[in-house]
Image (tube, rainbow, N blue to C red; front, side, top):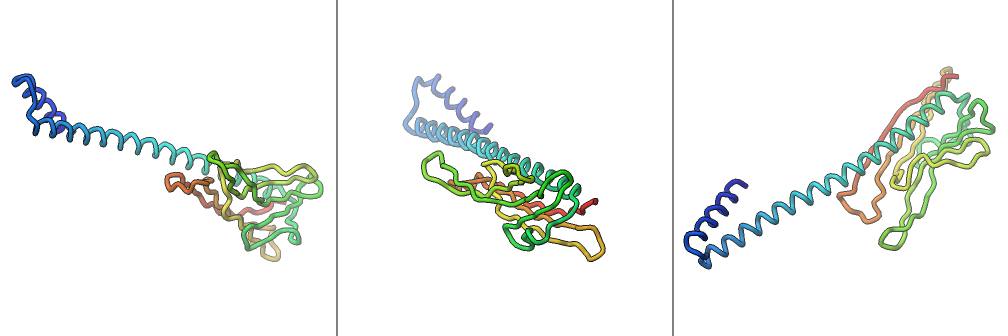
Amino acid sequence: MSILITLMINMSNAFTRRRGFTLVEALIYIVLAALAFTFIIGIGQDLLLGSVKIQGEREVSFNARTAINLITQKIRGANDVVLGSSTFNSSPGVLTITYPGVSPSIIFDTYNKTLTKSTGGTYVIRKLRMKEGTAAAVDLTNDKINITNFVVRNLTKSTEAHNINVELTFTQANPANDPNLNASISVETAISLRH
């Protein structure tokens, strides 16, 4: 960059002495100015794309932390795991637990939601949700996140308290398939019931 500035200054000095550029000097000046402009535009574009990517990674991370913390809290406080209405070892899984003060139970599962693209048309994402008793289900992820994997495993041994393994993959919704917007995080945790 300093070489480019030095050349531009030298060319400017030559212009003031002779009162004009030769055709070769003008072409060199135009090429150097175009290269500098392209370089500056490239840096600006990289900064902008980096900012968008970081924002997507933050969104994915925030949703993952929030959902995993709530699932962990509910499982630890649960009375029991309802084995008959839980779906283990496949995606999308379902986890049903009984919880003190909640009738009949708490259910963690996923569902498909259709959204509208800003450019028109629609796309489908999978959302994670929780249903407590007879209350309406509550989304645990926002519309910017797609759950691409939700597996629940029962790791309980015969005489131990229930031990549940939860595996989730949170991916930024990317209806335009823009490689700059690909952000994803996979989380796996094992949680034991305390009751």
